[in-house]
Length: 357
Image (cartoon, rainbow, N blue to C red):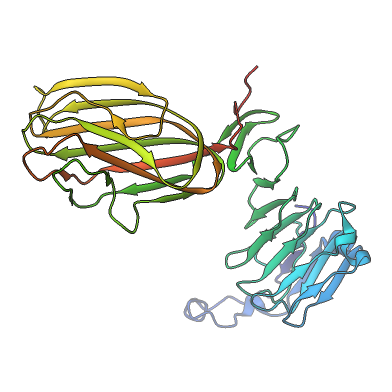
């Protein structure tokens, strides 16, 4: 590998080693009078000729423009939590590697004495490749087209608050349009990466047997805060109830401003493991407002699932809710496994992700 320094030991003694001493890791006759040959130093020095040496003194440091334009930056005495900052005049003139730990191998510049928690901050407009070993952290501000790897990995991550990249690269990850995206081949096959908000009952939840509106999940995790964007969602619940004829309503409440909601739903009057259940309905809704989503049921329970999209135009909460049109005749009880999932797929105006034409 270019840039590696290779040291070869040529042992010249003819005396045999003592196996017992060798097992104890002691000095052996074969270690005496060693000749050493060194290869690769010229290549290593060539890489460091255009490097800036910065002694951070354990604290923060702001590079000058000349320093930022170097081919490589070597940091000495990087303290825990220290920040390396590029000057705003740098813009996107340069490109270099900055490492925060000497555990990263290959041809990368070695930063001496870096400690866990060290931070590199990159301001707007940069194109840089950053790397850090375990314990380090990279902060990238908005409007950055940066690339970085961890522990010498062969993948890159691009962070950009602008539009879709014109030429995405294979295995690249991006954050745009309020969602994460990945590219599986050069210039093509770009898709969103699920980053889900999820809630799940791990125990039964007792509801009130009346016609009041009730949140699907208990206080403390019943409301999801969402930023503007388009979200794919799925909500499902299993529930026992009374046998007095009743139907269920479902909806998404909250403080978020919603431009539209479209989803399909399945509901069936059923108890656990009862294949003879009745009243199955498969339908769709274009409203987040609480509304009737079942036939009348008398069998003592429900299975329900809704799946679709919701577009949020102003940040706020979204709260999955249900109600009955009348008391069921017994305490309704939501079962463990009842869940809700919301996944961002783009901003509130997104129409497609991927190579649609």
